[in-house]
Image 1 (spheres, rainbow over the protein chains, first blue to last red):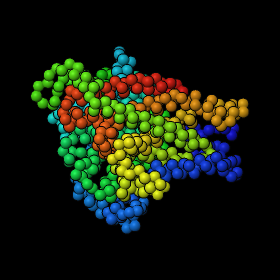
Image 2 (image 1 turned 135 degrees about the vertical axis):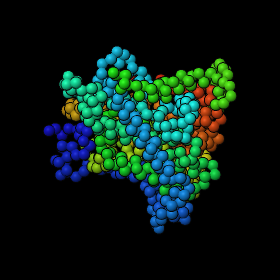
Image 3 (image 1 turned 90 degrees about the vertical axis):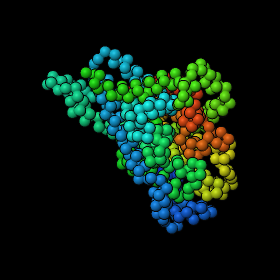
Image 4 (image 1 turned 60 degrees about the horizontal axis):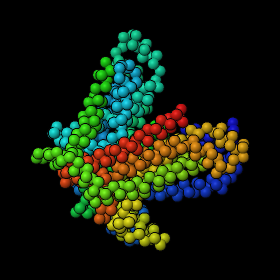
Length: 296
Length: 284
C-alpha cells in the first residue's frame, strides 16, 4: 500500500494513518486543525445562538454586554411563541405540505422515471429532453400564472393549492431514472416472461432496489419545501394556512416587534425536525448529495 | 402502457410548469391586473423593464449580490474542501457534517439568527467585533453594508453544499496521479496546480454556475432582514417580481420581469449542463 492512497468515499482514517500516528502531528496539519476548529465554531455560532437564546430570559437577551449562554434558563419564550402564532397549526401545516409534496413527488417521479428508464416506446428520448428542459425554469419565474391557475381552481389557502404544483418535478424524475438505468434488466425480463405486469415489476422489483435513492430524494424534497418561504407566502393569505417558515416571518414584519428570545424559540422549533433527521442519516445523505449535485 | 406511468407527472409538469410559462409570456404583453379586462399593450412592459429606474436598480442589486455571494461561497467551499481532504487531518467526518449542517436550516431562520447576531445594541457578533475595534453600527440600515450582510447569510447557508461537492470531486482524483507527480519531484503547490486544478475544473465550473443561478433567485433572507431596504439597496429581481405581482398586482409587468429572470437562468443552465456532462465523464 502506498503512502499516497487517498481515502475514497470514506472520509475517516485512510489506510496509511497507522504508521503516521506514531509521529507527532505535522505543523501544517496542526495549523489546519486549528483553522478548521475556528471555522467550525463560526459556522455553528448562529445555530448555537438560536438554541441558547430560545431559553434566555428577556432581561438577559436585552442586557449589555450580550452573552452567549443564559444564566437562568427559562421556558417563557417557548410559552410565548405558542400564543403569538397558531403555532401547533403551523407546524402541522408544514408537515402536511412538505410531507404531501414529498410523497406525491416520490410516487409520480418514480413512475415516470420507470417508464423513461425501462419501457421502450417511441419518442422516449425526446420526452426526456423535454422533461429535463423544464428543470431550467425557476419557479419564481412562473409564480404569477401558477398563482392564477391555483386561484381559478379555488385552491388558494388549501393544501391542494400548496402541494399539487409541486407533486412532480423534473429533477426527481431525472435523478431516479439514473438509478433505474443502473439496475440489471435480467430480473424484470424474467418476470415479464412469467407474465408480471409492468406495474408489478415497478413495485416489487425496481422500487425495493432503489430505497436509498428514494430516501435521499425524499429528505431533500422535504427539507426544501419545509424551508421554502416564497411559496407559502404566495399561496396562503390566511395566517392559519401558512407554514412554520412563513408564519415566523409575520412576527418580524412592520409592527411585529417581538423579543429575540421568542423569535429564537420559534426558530429552534422550525429547524429541530430537520436537524435531527439530517443528523440521523447524514453520512449517506451527504454522499448522495455530493455525487449527484442535487438542486438547492 | 408507458403513458399510464408518465401521465401523473406529465399532467403536473404540463399544468404547473409548461402552461404557466406560456401563460406568463402572454401576460407579459398585457396590462393584466388580476381583475377587470386585460388589454394587449405590446412591448410596453418590456420597455418598462428596461427603462424603469427601480427595475434597473433591482437588476444592478441582483448582480451586486451575485458578485458578493458567488465567489465567496465557492472559494470558501473549495478552500475548506482542500483542507478537509487532507487524510492526516483528524475529525474529518465531524468537520464534514458540521459544515454541511447550515444547509438544512432555512434561509428565513438563518436570517433571524444573523439579524440578532449583528443587532447594533444586543448582538453578540457586533459586540465581539466592537471589542476588536470594528464598529459596524446598524448594518441592515446601512446602504453600503446591508447587501454584504444578506449575501453573507446565503454564503453561510449554502457553502457547505458546495463544499461536499468539491470534497467528492477531490476524492475522485486518482491517487496514482499525485504519486506520479511526487515521484517527478513536484511540490505541494505544483501538484495543486497541475493535478488538482485541471481535474477539478469541471466540478468547479458546475458549482460556480449552480451558485450563480441560486444568486439570481435571492429572496428569502432579504425579505426577512431588510425587506429590500434601506432605500431599495437590497431590492432584487425576485423581490421586485413578488412586489409587482402579489402586492401591486401588476401581473403583466411582473410577467415581463419574470421572463428576464427566466432567460438569464436558462443561459446559465445551458452552461451548467455542459459542465454537468463533463463532470459525469470525469466521475465515470
